[in-house]
Image (cartoon, rainbow, N blue to C red; front, side, top):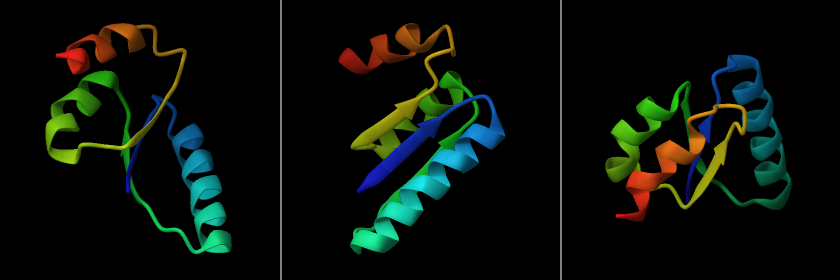
Length: 72
């Protein structure tokens, strides 16, 4: 399963990644995690990555604008 983490703060991306990896190790369920520091970077890779789960920083004010192209 592919997971995308989108956050402009590296520390937040790392914290969430650690939490996911800790959980996956405890439950023997493994993910591919890709990190993005901007919505634009995420969109550029979306079609190739095809993430099943996306964690996106709500304070990236353009978050809704980032998601609009995905509806198509």
